[in-house]
Length: 300
Image 1 (tube, rainbow, N blue to C red):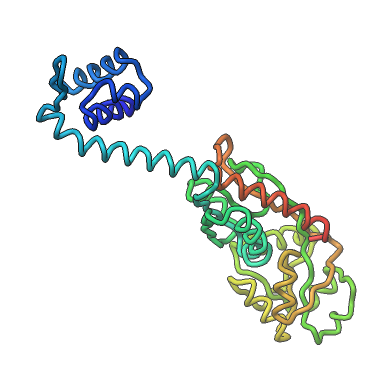
Image 2: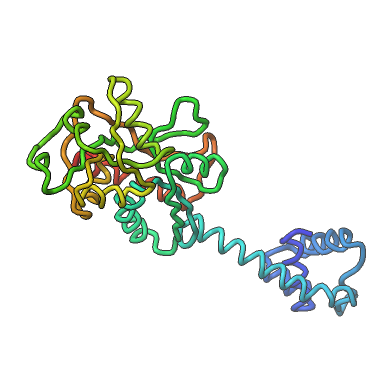
């Protein structure tokens, strides 16, 4: 059965007139007759009895009417839903983002997105950098926001901006009056950082090890917010991506430009190569790229 055949059947069944059905469907008498004949042949029996004066439903035709109405209603609903999804009148997009991004830069992005597409729902998975890659790779989400993966990654990476690490010190520390600080000076203090396998922790260790330096870790946590509170309480210092600077300040710590060496890495959107995004995911991707121009302008 085809949708065209079902619509033709219902038009004849409702009017019990091929002539009236032809006008409603804008078909010729012969085209309508051939459509009904093809439907009957496909089903294996007659749906109408007809003569020169009357058209009537057979018992099988009577049984098909409610089923046909339900099929057409379902089909129309599917058409309407997909049309709304393609035009972003409704829909859903799933995103995975590392917590430092999800908790700092993502909320204003989602506000812009919601203002444009109020009927599109967004599910955010705030997971560590490594899990972002896994969720995109396993098709659990359409978009991921994370640091640039290694060249061996099978994912497509679209850079948004380059994030640079900044030093985080207590407000009452003598270091807090500095405009910038080098790593050797910072590492003289007790160091607080994220636990492995955090990408932030691994990046810091790799950059410093290449220059013969080592993190003097005395406190570690899974959450950046906990790291910030520890620093604000005077337990030590830390280094975090610049996108977390606002969060660190809210927690009571001070952020300072960090140099010698400068530790930085591109942050961007991860997608499956060759895969076409849904209309909702593409719209969110476009908003992410637009907003990233503003981050670069303010030096994130």
